[in-house]
Image (cartoon, rainbow, N blue to C red; front, side, top):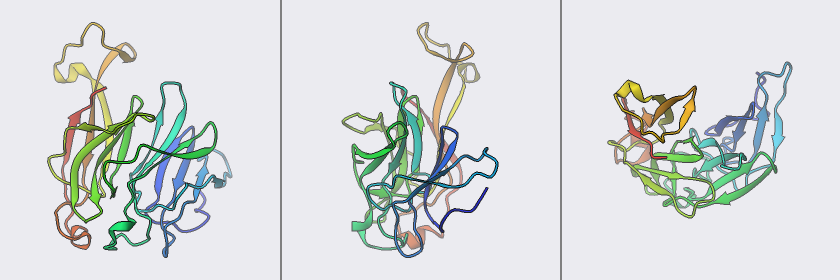
Length: 233
């Protein structure tokens, strides 16, 4: 795969529609709003410039996901982040609360329902049309254990079960397994999602940094282990 058109750190990366999108990130001196995409399967493929986000963002590692609406529209969702280039900056004003949404159909960005509080280093994942935001660090440098979810277009972020440990700069994803693996008897009206097998879904988070010190101290204290919770549809 060819190199990016320019150096980036802390960019959001997501794969959707057969293309890989790189959103924002720091160029070493400031946050950027640029977006590039590439089709990895295309021989001799090159990076294509996409419409820029409405504001510069960095510290987006994991904070970018793809989701499909009930109408079938494919979206890229970017949650929070920072508007400055330094992850260790004490300036709370640089931590973002806004949520950027890109429509692949129209090629335009818009801002959706803002987060309940500004945060960065908060990964997100998606399942069944909902975006799940997991932990992160707030504007004061305190690590968070709350989990929120939103269906694009909703008025409010919904509270999900909290993490057992506050985390930032970790990874999050969705695991789907047959309900028979955990001894659950499906309800008669349960929705089949794959090959007639009813599925059990959980959100899973692991790794990252923990503690309630200043961010520069958190970076020396990596948290291990994985925790998960059931996802409500």
